Image (cartoon, rainbow, N blue to C red):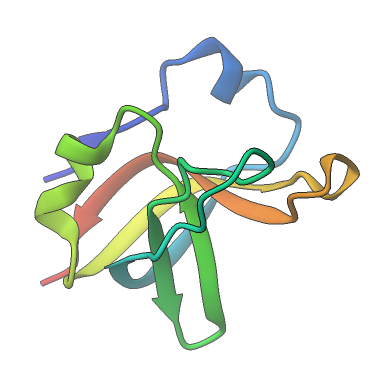
Length: 98
C-alpha cells in the first residue's frame, strides 16, 4: 500500500524536476548539526546505484515504518548545489516492496 508523503504539497509540485521511481532500502542517517546543515535529511535511500539523502521534514512518523525495508519511492531528485547543499530525494509517495 502506497503512503503519500509530499505529493500534494505546493512546494513539491512546483519543483521542475521530473518525478521518477527509485527502489532501495530506507535507512536512518546521521545528521550533522550546525547552522548551515540540512537537519531534515534524516534518511538515506540505499540502492544498487548508491545512496541518496532523503528530505523528511515533518514526515518522520510517516517514514519510520519503512526504515530497514525494501521500498519503492516515487519522487524528485532535487539539486540544491546552488545553495551549497547538493542532491536530495523528495518523496511523493513510498511503498514496501514484498
